[in-house]
Length: 244
Ligand SMILES: NC(=O)c1ccc[n+]([C@@H]2O[C@H](COP(=O)([O-])OP(=O)(O)OC[C@H]3O[C@@H](n4cnc5c(N)ncnc54)[C@H](OP(=O)(O)O)[C@@H]3O)[C@@H](O)[C@H]2O)c1
Image (cartoon, rainbow, N blue to C red):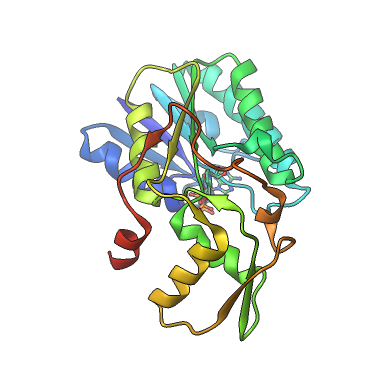
């Protein structure tokens, strides 16, 4: 199949392109650097020509109040062009429990992205993943100084970007789910615990302090971000990933 991967140069997108190609498909990465802009629609119809499937792995440049408009405009453009090009399956990557964290505008934006896809004209699949291991450094950088990293004790069940990409590629190569598949990592941590393990692995001697108001993940409580019943559990553990 010809599978267009919008955002195919990003963290997840580039891995998805490699997996699809390795499985004998014709994966076409589309992004601003290849002349396709999902915000303006420039180059999109041309890029989707002949595609059987489109996978949307773009991300908003910010996680703030601008993110809902990004996902609204990019999804509207994507679905219009996909319908015009006769694409038979549209896939997006969202976040486990996004609807359970309404105080986080970026998560509200991801729910909006899902709702636009579900209401649209193209048969669809939604993959919902938990937080990526690759994301922990960014999460720590928001609330750290030279001696201390402040993190909330939010429960997370993170996973590797490679396992996320495999799940997205598997769904993209199949028939539209017309529904959602959840994927999650094999272990549950509190975010502060995850931060301590990550710092220790790098010999970083900063101290992790629990702060229930620190960073974006302070908005998530209880088991909001943990795998729900029926979720597929990915194989790679955090320590395996750190060692890899
Ligand atoms: N972080 C997490 O823990 C997590 C968890 C679950 C789901 N997700 C979701 O995973 C998805 C992919 O995330 P990621 O970390 O792989 O993102 P990323 O590395 O930031 O990559 C974003 C991709 O989108 C492209 N892009 C940005 N603006 C675009 C535009 N206007 N038109 C076309 N392409 C555009 C970028 O192209 P250039 O390279 O040319 O700039 C890049 O290829 C996101 O939707 C995110 O919500 C994230």
